[in-house]
Length: 541
Image 1 (tube, rainbow, N blue to C red):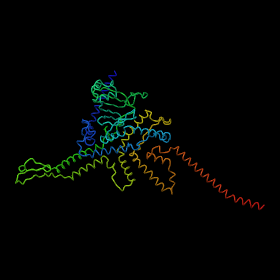
Image 2: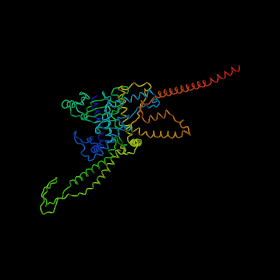
Image 3: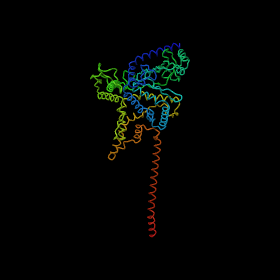
Image 4: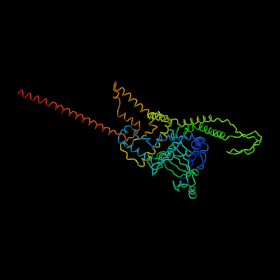
């Protein structure tokens, strides 16, 4: 009975995969075209290439390749830079965030998560993910638990990926078709769980590759009270593609695949990218450069006009060579003038290059050199550029950063890698606040408004009691929040109250000392007067 159920499950999965492959076919040819001219190391989507073979045969100009890498690097630096913090955690309940104990625990959790990110292979894998986003509009980052490094990331090739959305437009089902050596497959799942054919292949030729499929999708029915892998929200199925043999059945607490899209059409599942917009310009530029190179070669080494009855063949064109012709003949060898217009070709090339650079935001990312610019002006221009890029990248916040951070947090929480949470925090939901350069630049307008308001209030202070309307504590906390300052450099509310109480006590003590000194001085000044009065009274007596 169980074998029959497994065979039916395998058939249903292969049928679903076949439909997904058909739906993705148009995108595959588009991706291949992009990869051939802009992202050559991924140019094996619809083509089979031998490892180590040349992949840039169709590229005559590297402008698009450089622009794509520049935008991917900029995304990496603006969203997930290794040099600075790019997210913090906070509770959804605002009142809890004002509790010092809660803030200190969240700060410790955040620090531990940054350590886990740093120890893993996150930086190099997410960088590849950004390349896929800019090139294909869709990327895939697999996040797995690791015994040594806590977490392990893997940027998967777009050709492996088949996805489905839920009713809210989020990717919740992933089919990944990939190849694995027979030895790796047996080591991962055990020889008893693979099919007979794979077991035979493993014994005879363990390095032969086997086509496998990994399916992760929401589990329709499960018991939340049970903690085993067959009662988790997402079911995980590995099966051999050729035979349909199911190798492993398990589950995940959350989707291990993070699938962000750069931009997306409302009726499409896969994303759209800047490279898709730049593809016509890139193809035109490559063609112009190819023709220009041919024209330049003809001008440097032009075709020759040779009289057919005057020259003694063959015609030699190497330096120092001698060509013979019949005496008395006035004919001679002449170059063929092709009438090439090099300035026109260069203008056309530069126009395409400028267009490609703008599509990849190179004009916004790079700051043109201006020696008269001050540091403040450079900062303002940086903020402006990041605000321009912000709306186009807002989807990455919800489809890449948020599920990735929550996945890592849950893995570490289940692994008991955090300090025990205080009782006041039990049952509280945690939210993410982004503090990367990109998101801080988007908040800079709010900070500018606050500073402008304070300047206006200062000028009105002499004619109106504007300071009575300002909450000093709220103002400071809002500025801290906008700038994304870490909690460890900010004093807690209790420490601030203690310091203010100490300052009040010191002021009171100083006032009391001043009062005592005044009373003492008055007493000293009054003593001669009292003595004189006493003397007068004695004389009168």
